[in-house]
Amino acid sequence: MGEDSRYTWAEVATHNGKNSSSIWIVYKDSIFDVTNYIHEHPDGPDSILDVAGKDATKDFDSAGHSGDARQILAKLKIGEIVEEEKKYDANGKKKKKVVQVPPEKERRSCCNIITCGLIG
Ligand code: HEM
Image (cartoon, rainbow, N blue to C red):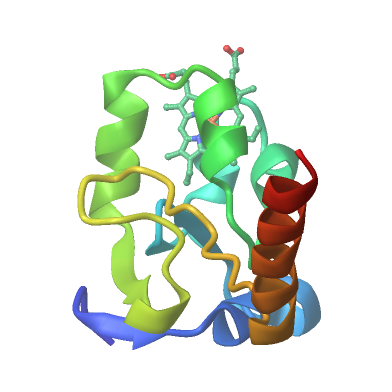
C-alpha cells in the first residue's frame, strides 16, 4: 500500500470505520487513511467519521480548513481513485458528466429541426 495504489469507490466504502475497519476519506480523488488522526482532530472525530469511506471534498472545503490542516491531510495520503472512476481532471476541476444522447433520439430531434424548418 503506497501513494501510488489505486482503489475503486467500492473499495474505499469498506473503510468506513465500522466493524473495526480502518478509516479512509477521499479528497479530490486522493485517498487518505485517517484512522490514527480522528482523535487529534480539533473539531472531534465525528465530523470525519460522517464522511468515512466517502468523498469528503465538499465537507473538508466548507469547514474552511487552514493550510496546516491541508498539510496534515497530505501526509496521510495512501493512494488514488482508479482512473476510470475519478471525479476530477488533472487540473483539480470537477469533471463534467458526459451525457450520451441515444442514437434514436438524436435522429428524431434532427427530424424535428427539419420539420420545424419546413413549417416555419
Ligand atoms: C483528515 C482530514 C482532516 C484534517 C487533517 C483536519 C484538520 C483540521 C484542523 C488542523 C483543524 C483546526 C483548524 C484549521 O487548522 O483549519 C480543523 C478544524 C475543523 N475541521 Fe477538520 N480536518 C479534517 C477533516 C474534516 C472533515 C471531513 C470535516 C467535516 C465537516 C471537518 C470539520 C472541521 C471543522 C468544522 C473544524 C473547525 C473547528 C473550529 O474551528 O473550531 N474536518 N480540522
